[in-house]
Length: 500
Ligand SMILES: Cc1cc2nc3c(=O)[nH]c(=O)nc-3n(C[C@H](O)[C@H](O)[C@H](O)COP(=O)(O)OP(=O)(O)OC[C@H]3O[C@@H](n4cnc5c(N)ncnc54)[C@H](O)[C@@H]3O)c2cc1C
Ligand code: SF4
View 1 (spheres, protein in one colour):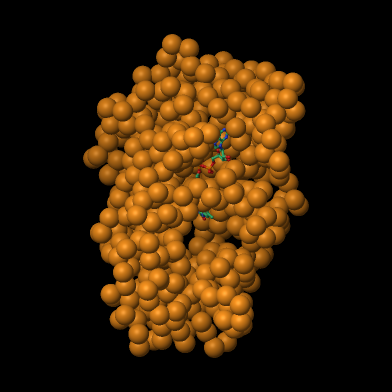
View 2 (cartoon, helix red, strand yellow):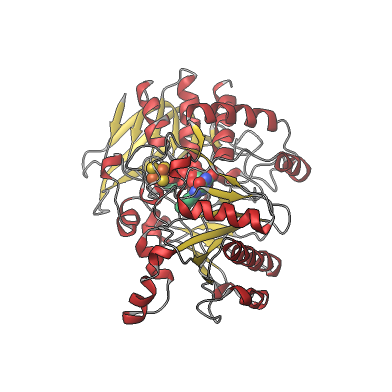
């Protein structure tokens, strides 16, 4: 077993394994551990650094510097420029996410069958989800860790008359520190750097960190390994070159933005490569309450509702964000901002994630940075606005005295009798501060090679020994949080690969 970290120039690395897995996030770690459990020697190659939980940052700035991909500066370019948030560290985005665990809804498999000819996945994915829930110790947010924001949301939803629930997460004994975005220093969150990645090492595998893959090496139509150059975890200076040979196959799991870009610069030919990028764009509405809420006490995300997944197509959740992110959302500066921050203990943010139908593209750009073009059409913007109205109504049902909608061109705050103003809120995406954190597509699966990059087992059409096993294969939005689906799909693909 070996962990190879950053190497200086001149100390080139050559390694060989049965399978080479690019990326150690949700998809990569799940695929790697499945392959390792089959008895194979696996090498995980990860662009980001290995960070132990005691070294996780506390601030948003630290998270952007140490954990986020490209400092969180990646934008979806459309009419608005909305940030795309992903991680770049051993464990991938599972290190910074909220670990919400939702089973793949049955209608998704029916849709994939109808639209893309994909059959026989449902039972296998659910079986892997059984395993994941056991191994990653999925629990409902425990009562002492719920916090006031989550409790208020539960109250608001029940008064507003719709179904909602405490969230189930891959967390063992959440202490409710509200720090999931900066990494869980308490090691309660079961990010993949704490379980599946170490298991791959324990089974005789390798992890090469701070090692962005430049290219998949392809001979004829067969993937034979990966090459790249180490990148210093702090200075970002280039280090030694590396080549890792794959005796059996290369598994690409570098995320929705990086997997298509990597395949493109590796010379993979597919008419569908980089197409069908999708997301669940989301934004938040603050409620201000008479009593202190202390939003950063309690699970980062503890409450959710899927009541609107089919109509109008969105999910509602609570979300506690770090203090400095709250400050950046309360517009104004100087004395005015200080005045507004006085309300900090009394506010909490709830957000929506829109099940958007709009599609975009991912391309490999300058310096190997993915370029994402994506915007929401009018139908999706109507859903987006509807989500804000639902959040506002839920806040007022829970007893908020006012809300802060955060919409450009609208009043800074609205009272309970002003919700109707939101019905006319702009449909221009530039008026909203939104982020994209649930991403899909770019290497979508399907039976028709003219319209899909991989088949229904993640194998790239027309190539041997090349599999994609991350969110980029997902050919639709899900309307629920994606990690559980990504991990189970990756396990199913890896199982097929190991049995070939
Ligand atoms: C703030 C936030 C909160 C979220 N909360 C939830 C949640 O609660 N529940 C949920 O289901 N989903 C959540 N998500 C989404 C979920 O985390 C992602 O959908 C999921 O992690 C994607 O898995 P992946 O394997 O496709 O990519 P990732 O997990 O992002 O892993 C990709 C890995 O590949 C590495 N990589 C990239 N390029 C290269 C390269 N060239 N060479 C080597 N390595 C490379 C990256 O550094 C990264 O480690 C959240 C996302 C964010 C940003
Ligand atoms: S809320 Fe705190 S203790 Fe709970 S999983 Fe997130 S970071 Fe860990």
